[in-house]
Length: 312
Length: 226
Image (cartoon, rainbow over all chains, first blue to last red):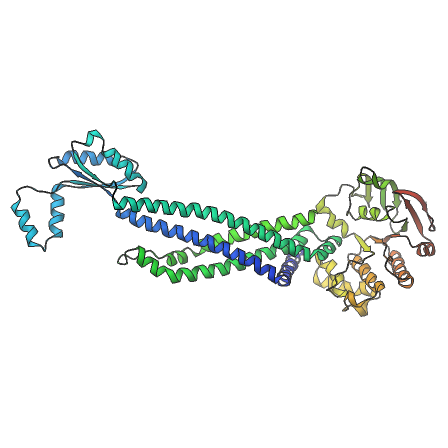
């Protein structure tokens, strides 16, 4: 084994010995780390779930435009083409007066009374419609305003979006996802700071209990890496164990609550979104994110704590 | 060869631990550094092990100018210089063997080399039969011999002994001095800082006397005089 390999093996062994010798300090740090990781995971999954719910509702939402009875199809097509050019519109569907009647008839094919009534009418009573899907639900208000302009007033009878229940749901969901995102950032920041502070002070205690050994190490010519290494590896070890425990708790919880959430928020007939399946599919990035965060925080705190001690 | 040229160490505006010290110590020499407490003996040794940095002047060890040594070079220097203190600085929860092996472990020595070397060193300091004892089970003289054994782990060219007999009775003190003479005869340069006049006078070796940070006397086959 090379000198580097020997040193690494000895440093790692010392890190494990330190871990056991300071088991209560190690456990305290680990608990804080686990709570932080759970908070961050919860916010992450809440954000994913919220976005998914929002997307599903967005797909159901559109803005409908009802044309006046005597508007000719060519004007409707022109307006539809014009709207398609807008960046905030994803799709425009034209339902002509005839097509609307066809759909109405198909829906009520089993109702002879409606069929009779329609036959009694000489003209088609249903107006032509446009169904507009925006690229983002936030754009509906602007699109509706655009359609209320004077140039459209001879053609458009009604723009059906403003003050509807759907709009309120969309607004609420947007506010919810934005809050989750902002909350996640603030809470992650606060907990990360807390972890750094607790870890930093825990390591200072650990270093203090090993001060005799550290002084002797330096006296006999131990390299900086040999002195710092065990503390940094110990901190990383704490972080990795915290990731394992936090992931186990997260996955178990998601597995337990996922069916209820899916049933509540999605249409069970159309293979509903499962947050547990999402977590399993993205297990590498979910755990990877935690490892990067935990190891990063642990590494930084331990490095700063040991360097400060050695400088003094 | 160790060379000090106009070396001063100042801690504050009116506190000079060493003042323009110039000294040359040839390889293999045995030098007693004497002086009252606070004279600057320990500071002189600390400059050699880079525990302290000189304020001015130049310190050279075997052609290596360590005056402005870089932090990353200090471990390399300390593996060439063994240091022994009055308070032994041993790990109480480790055996004699582990204390000596620890010095080699932190330096990255292979396990086989440690296993082969440590018994030889313990034999040299006459502690082979105490290899599995803990420092708490030993006398002061034995603890100091463990500290010397640890200092010898790297086969250093220089051994710095800072009041090694300060905590020992006359019998154990003489025991330690005999050990230092033995190590010196094997080719290691020994610098012994002490204020034990009996030992210095009995040694009949070079004596450098320091007073208020200055070298006031430097005699071959010298005696203790303040």
